[in-house]
Length: 494
Image (cartoon, one colour):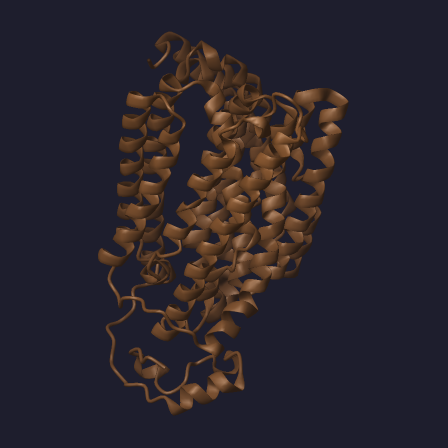
């Protein structure tokens, strides 16, 4: 094994020795001499957490500013139908990636061997193989879609019948090969909540994507500007993870105990990701076959605006809360509940308040951000605003990963998947496109009983709190009315 430095208290064997996954791994630790070194005192968790949260949110806010700017410019340079086509191409690439998700990052973050270089090199080798397999699977799917369209298996005028779609899927999904080469220094940074350079890398990649996408759209007006921007963004991120993050460089390595440890945790992540894919992408899977590229483009724009908030909550809980809660669960489990509530309150207030604000000001938001071609996206964003009332529970599943219970997340995603593939077709065939949008907003309701059950096992339920935070919705609604008046006076941005 490639040696790493340990503190005095961790010399020879880790403190949680009984959790070493196998006798072979224990023997390996005993036989492999570990140098005893004295490390400087660790930062207090509170300080680390605040700094990590600050970097994470700053990065997210800046990336969203870049994303919105790109979106506003591209909607004026490209026709709405292109956004519907790209929504399907992205959905397929993300779906295949989630279907085969090995959970390498969360597995390495929570593992006691997560700082061992041989463990990380093994994870890197798996990551490369995984990225190549995803692209290969996407190529096969693209060919299958093209052949099916030739034989008339899709409704005429649906997104799946667009002749350029297969080639776009192939080109877009090659980013998984590039991202598979990212250094595991990125995993180490997340494990220790050192998110400063990680955030800067993300911002640089976003700026590169913005510059390339807008430049190519301006000169060509082609949908391929999306593809080029995505590939160059992935390439920029990958290069910077190797050259700008501190730590040892990766090399190809294969270690059986590391594989077993990764698979032990990752099998639940993989199953959970499969179910998440089914649930989260069911709307676009169905709508691509039911609607035109134009209507799917409207839906995608509205969905992306709503998902920005979910992304902020998910980012904080996955990148900051999960490592922090995992550390508390290992070192001070009696404080897990109090820390969980401290993290949850601001998330709930933002999600619920935003739901009310978007519902009352949805039309004004679309009118200000986009031109008249996108006006039909307004009622869609108003309906989807109700999804925020349920989305707020999604990031909370990070607490289950922190306490080493990933199966809870799998059960929740199974319920979401069944609900999605039941409610969406039912809503469409009973009430048409609008019914499908309502189903997309509310399909997560059946998962709430499971969340209450899992929280009960860890003493994390508070029904008075759950009722009280809902008061943020009317407050947000009134704020949205006020904002609508201001936006009407401001007029369109462009």
